[in-house]
Amino acid sequence: MKPDVSKLLEIVASKLLFEIAPNVQPSYRQSSVGLTGMLLGMVREEFERACARRVEENGVLRALFARAAKSVADTDLRRRLESAAAGVDASLLVSDLDKSNDALRALLIDLHAHVEEQDAPWARAVDAEIWRELVASTERRRFALAPF
Image 1 (spheres, helix red, strand yellow):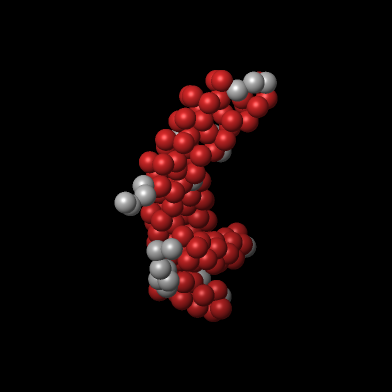
Image 2 (tube, rainbow, N blue to C red; image 1 turned 120 degrees about the vertical axis):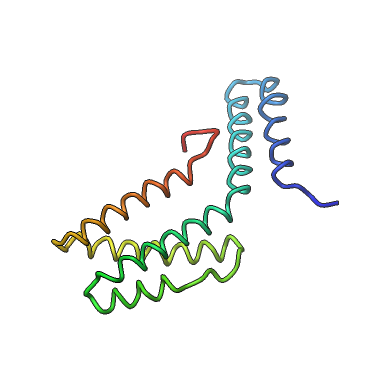
């Protein structure tokens, strides 16, 4: 038997929300059971997309760095951007993808700080691209079930 984690979480969340919560008293316990069911639904959604979202975001950041590196005059920053752009994820394990993403996001902060100090058209373009990616990144993390 191969356990289907997504299906299991869906079933447990549904049972909590629609079978157990309505029959629990007092109301604060009912709310707690309902919230637990909602959270399990969110865990199911994140489980389903976890790898794809991280791979996509890491790729987008690497591509952004490759484009930005062409205009960055700061030698150290340009070298780090080029190195990150050429990088690959160690594996498809979520923990490895998160390590890559953490490093890429730290570099994104450095790049963003750098372009905000520059008064040039290329810097404004990179700044705009960074902001577009930050919005897109937030959208990738949106949950269908709740506004978290």
